[in-house]
Image: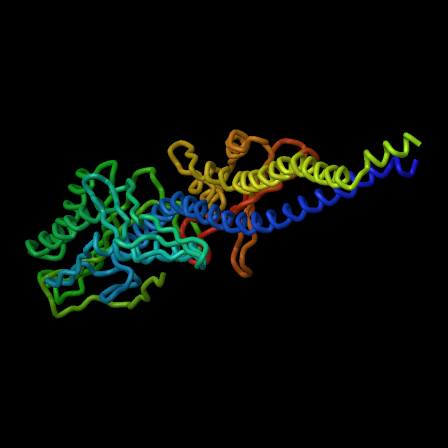
Length: 294
Length: 157
């Protein structure tokens, strides 16, 4: 009987030996696979993170554009000031012209804001290049780009490079608004220089306001108020005109209002002053304002 | 007597060695494909499972509702409560996640930074739905100097 189980014992021993060998091979294989899985996992995660970024950056571009438009219009086209009163710039002081270059300032402010977004969206493995932006006002397309790439890397594991060019539609309203406001500022100056007296100038400004409100009906509302004459007399006048160009469309932007310190939906309001007249011995009242720090 | 002789003949040294080798080879042959299959299946399952949360998140971020990209919709909902109801995201996720078991929520934020709460869970009862794969990303919020992005986590099964 004992001799009868001998073959079974032999089979069991060598079966167990074979099994141990297989388990050993499995363990060695699993270790190798685990290492490979870890590397693959890292690579897959990086590829997916890059894909996430490609969907998030256009949204960051949109928010940056909204905020740049809002900040620039509410502060008369500037975020840092020289000649201003309570953060509203003087676009004209007699013959001195200070009308902002809307496109250049939009580019500048947009890139400052967008740079903050890219810093926040990235992480230690991601490097964003220095971006540039162009606005095609006629086509309504903006292009945020860089000749360098967005780089995602983990040394010895992966190195991903992605084109840093994003093109998307934008609302051209802000530029139309600046153009209209510039025309209006020049018209006011022209009317003031043609005026014979303070009251004549005020009347002419009122007429210009009516004309522009009619011209930009359903787009913008021109709200104008004139200060008292600071000049020597009725004929030697000098005064400040406050202009607010209000966007009357229903398209409000989600923005941060620095005066309320909170996020709001708001339309655009472009504020600026004109100081003009015949008595250039008078100077406008200046109240310096700290620019917005992004 | 004859029987003893026969037994010796059956279990001779040569035969024993043959039996050992045969057993070894047969067990190895049977186990090798099983173990190989186990390894491969394990690896694929791990990678697919690992990737499924990422792919679902990618699909979610790629969606648009009334022309608005999903990150923008969620961002404005969080900061300005507009739209106030984003239950449609639940329906979208049900289409995206094959198991229909998911949880979308905002992640942990740094101290002293205002955070926004969002939690969208699958309608499947929680006993049947235990997410085992997760991913997270940062979505942009409308500009706020204190907080520009929010962490969005997606857990799926």
